[in-house]
Length: 498
Image (cartoon, rainbow, N blue to C red; front, side, top):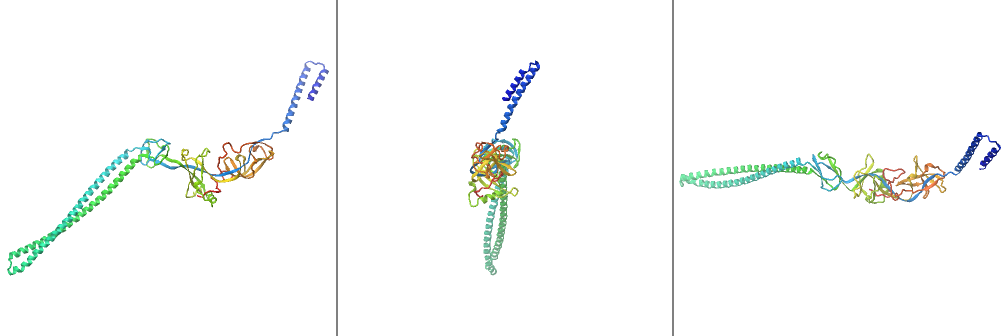
């Protein structure tokens, strides 16, 4: 203000000393006023610039204290959901698909009708098979009747043999009697005691009885021959019966097969489960054992299969030595595709027999209840298990850790708000946090945002923020055993052996 007053006073004295010069004088007066205003503005600007340069504001950074708490270490594997029982409904016979009898995507029970295939060709096959079977049964009955007749004739031939043998015995007795007469009359006829006529009669009777014996014996042989013929007839009838019985069995099998094919024109569900969409349209031809009409799957409970590396498998067994616990008792969690935790807990179910020669992994299967049918076959999900509990673990947000060519570092704000860049060693990741094994102390403030704008030794203005986002506390996240995420879980300090 002193300079401005001096300039004003000098100007006034000059004006009083000079005579008025008219128009040129007024122009000079105006130029003098503009000069005064310029000097005033220049003086004010210089004063503001000096003030700003003297008091700079420190940069703002977001900080959070290092947490210390007992932290469960989780192992995590990527798996796929598989139906507890899955049945592909294939057409068992070839034919036109006539109708669909179920609602797609609905639950069905065992025996529920799903599809109808045109049954008319198979009904005709059943009718023909029934006719063939009836004919075979008739032939069997006829053969059985012939066998009975032949057996009766055999018995008749046996009776005839017995009768002929009796006649032989009778003829032989008669012949012996007449022979005695001949023997008695021969000396008597020589001495005339009996007449020649009586002797001749006795001799004729003896010859007749001898002929009767021969005839009776011939009748016996004829009866025996007849018996042999009847026995051959019986064997032939038995063979005919065997053929007829085989024919009956063959026609019965054909009839059963025809009934089976006719039954397969009604496609029913073999299990209780969820029925999928149909794969062919009504009126299309379904080919036997090739066309998959739909799929029915039992989804409560639901299997989740995943792979465990051979190295992890061996580590699990090593860590479990001396601590026996059933693997089925370990609770499992399921992380869905949207990151939410499935509300039902699962458990290990089975371990595959062999290690894959191509991937070096074993296939594991877990089972989860699925009463609300939220899980469907073919979903990708993460299976998580608590492997161990790390007591007094130091945790910082993952965004506070910087990876510089494999070396991890964080920015630490000291009590005097001075920044220090500190190298750290990291452990597993737990949700949005990272376990720090070396380089930090509990309660130290680490920079979670703004580290790129400062350097070591810089003074900053710290703004406190929460270490975990709202709602994330208490929800365990994916964990790996190294500083970077791992595709499969880490070994536990206390884990059951399989």
